[in-house]
Each structure stands twice: as C-alpha cells, then as structure tokens.
Image 1 (cartoon, rainbow, N blue to C red):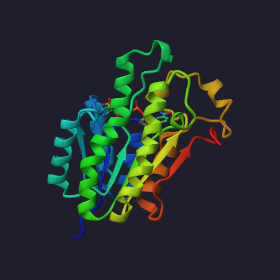
Image 2: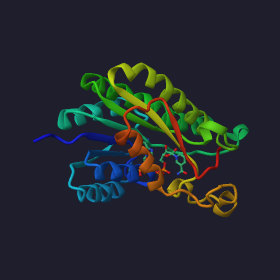
Image 3: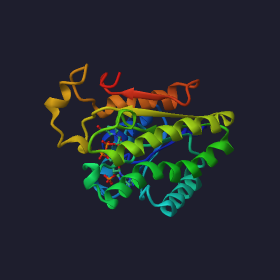
Length: 242
Ligand code: NAP
C-alpha cells in the first residue's frame, strides 16, 4: 500500500493554520500540526483532521527555539519517514508605533515570524533534498509588501519571509522543491478580532474580511495542486493591495 504524503503546518491548531491543515487533510495528506501552548485547541483540531481518514498528530514546540525545532523535526521524520509539504505559518503580532516599540516587541516578532522560517525550513529542506521533492509555503502578509503603520516589526519580518521565499526557490528548484508565499490581507482569526472591521472593509474591493479557508485553498493550490509554480507571492486579500 502506498503511504500518504506528509504535511507539517506550523501554528496549525487555530486560525489560518488550522484551515490549511484541514484542506491538506482533505487532499489526503497525513498532517502534523505544530502549536505553542493551547493544548485544547490543538487536540480539537487533531480530532477534526482524523475525520478525514488520515494520520494526524499535534507537536508542541516553539518555532522560535532552534533546538526545540530540530528535535521536533527529527521526531517527525523518525515516525512519518518524510515531509512533502511544509507550511511556515506560525506567527504573532506585537503592534505599536516604532518610536515606542521596545526591544522585546521587536525581537519576539522577528524571532517568531522570521527566524522560525529559517529554523524550520533548514532541517526540513534537507529532508526534502534527500527525497528530491517537496513544497514549502511561507505565510507572509500584505504588511510585508506595503508596510503598515504600527507594525514595523511585523512588516520587516514578513518582507523577510518574501525574500527568503524567492532566494530559497532558486536554491532548491534543481532538487524539485518549490517554495512559494501567500500574502493574506485581513483574515478573521483571533489575531484580528480586535480590529475595527467596518473601517477596514471600506478599503477592501471585495467588501469583506477573508475567512481562514480563503487562504487555505490558496495554500493547498500552491502546495499540492500546482507543480510549475515557484518563487511566487500570492496575495489573498480581497483586492486590498493591487
Ligand atoms: P492565530 O489565529 O493567532 O493562530 C496562531 C497560531 O500560531 C496558533 O496555532 C498558535 O499556537 C501558533 N503559534 C504562535 N506562536 C507560536 C510559536 N512561537 N511556536 C509555535 N506556534 C506558535 O493567527 P492567524 O491569524 O491564523 O495567523 C497565521 C499566520 O498568518 C501568521 O503568520 C500571521 O502573521 C499570518 N497572517 C495573518 C493575517 C490575519 O489577518 N489573520 C493576515 C496576514 C498574515 P497556540 O494557539 O498554541 O498559541
């Protein structure tokens, strides 16, 4: 019997990551979701994933801790033998105007949203190189494209993610590994629950916030359905940044 392909989704227990995990599971991949602390949400997501008839597992580790990441990737490979799809999705915000932004706010966001992509992609790309196949999808943001007031840390991290996506896509293409990014606009998750929805929607041509599934369908397309797309940044933003 042929084994399923295997996907790792960081920050896959809630929000956009959870929706990505579900779409990948529906496509028949075994899915490992990573998360940081909310065990209950992670357990609920794993149970939901299992209803798709695939193997699902939760792995708690901090994506900004290199040693923790390396240990977790080793455990995943020992058990699942391969990693076909990596979605670097885990992320946080610590917003504030730049002149008042303290070092902790800056470093937390850079470590969790940008350095994590290095920590996770580095060991995973070695696995993919051995397999001679793989697909990485990085979660950027429109903030990394247009820069956002109050988000100097976040915009910097997401712009970095876009640079990493382009450089890595060139380095890994000869090994049949594709690397793409998604730039979501405003998506309804815990991260955006306190934002002033009405004044934001006014500026969105499609006149609504996005749903996590709107992003997840694009991730599934880049990760699984496509095979001649690499180095691209796909905006999923209702037309906000055109
Ligand atoms: P969310 O609902 O707040 O979920 C965040 C997820 O990341 C949770 O699973 C959380 O796990 C996990 N996480 C946070 N810090 C982590 C860490 N250090 N190590 C491991 N896991 C960690 O966020 P979201 O809105 O779905 O955002 C997902 C991604 O999309 C982020 O990269 C974000 O920047 C990006 N994005 C979001 C929007 C938006 O409008 N929502 C727009 C553009 C880009 P726990 O529950 O255990 O903490």
